[in-house]
Length: 333
Image 1 (tube, rainbow, N blue to C red):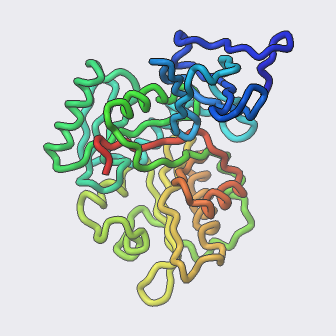
Image 2: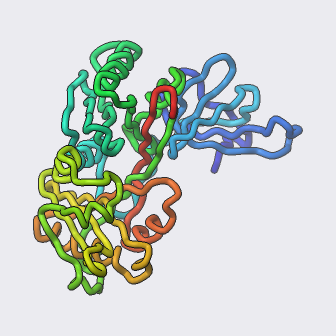
């Protein structure tokens, strides 16, 4: 990381650069001059009272005393992707939202308030894609009231780490007492390499609907209640995959939503007794082949923090992180 200009370290950022992606170097509070440096890259989300706040790609905020800065500069808004399909955050946000539709929704300016009786945060959170059409505090008050009327906790889904994401909104939420509860990454890749994997998919059954056996393996709802069925069936073109187990059990499942050039993969789960048999790869491959025949060419999926096994599997298939997304709840858990 190069900061020098004419052989000198320079702080070339100011409070006027709030909202821009920056790279800074600071001297540890306990270090003497010439001691240990720490570098931070992210969006400059505030600079007040002598404290610089930088939101990193993963959504974590780093508070840096202004006096400890030894270098800083504005850098390109997002690094260029070296592989996979080109895609903007705005496009992906809308595509992923269409793959997981709520039972009820309401527009608040460019925000969408979504509810589905509490089944998944994605279907029970605000998707803020622009201006809410009113001051932020007023908008957030309306959000809390809207969810309280439905006996649901208020969540706002945000994103960080790509051009056009919402680092500034994340900082504003945190300043108002909203707590980040869950974070994940959205990964994208080309569809054909997944469909071309040399995998036996003869055990994978594809269907336009899911049954109780599929839902028991999914394990997030308990039963196929009407609101659960509606959310799972939502999307332009939905496919369910299952691999039969012993008796009436299901060894592995998956869900895919085809939407134009995009195929979204979710709910890929394997019974612990059937892991390390290639079933997750078989499910992905079978769904990818169906999506390819339906006209899709690019793929996306979401990986929660800490799921290193899934991250490694999808990396081998050619997927790479595009951005991180987060769910903020007012007041925390």
